[in-house]
Amino acid sequence: MIVDWNKANIDLIAKKIVAGSVAVIPTDTLYGIVASATNPEAVEKVYLAKGRRPDEPAIILISSRDDLRKFDISSSSFQNEVMDKYWPGAVSIVLPCNGEKYKYLHRDTKTLAFRLPNNELLLDLLKITGPIIAPSANPEGKDPALTLVEAKNYFDSNVSIYADAGIKNAPPSTLISVLNDEIEVLR
Image (cartoon, rainbow, N blue to C red; front, side, top):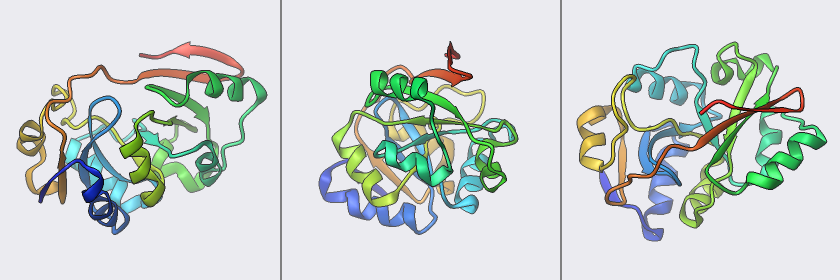
């Protein structure tokens, strides 16, 4: 199913994601192939569709910093300062996550990357769905989809709903690690 990325379709897209479906939506950077971050089966569907390496965690989009508690993330004052500086925005921040409960997300890295986007429509969706994993919409080793047609060619029936926002040709998010109260730019 293909729908326009607009306020009128947010409930429909959110309903699909909450039900465990995989979607392709525009994020604040690129098109992402997304699923509920709290649904291990949906997360696996994304990994299978992308052919993603099983040891590579995906970025999780959140609607507020309160969502970090859902993953047992407790941040230091330094990490809070970094989040204050870069969020909302196109910076994904890697934080420690030691919980075995979240192994399906952290993939034995004991870290998770989160981003609080600066995009009203995306935030509206996240307020309904809760946190979603949102790797770029492309199979491993291929270029990110810039259009919905490209994403559909990549994933076809592996995705239940596609949200069209025209061409998305933004750079991927900056990825920084904020472990041990040090910042390391990863991308």
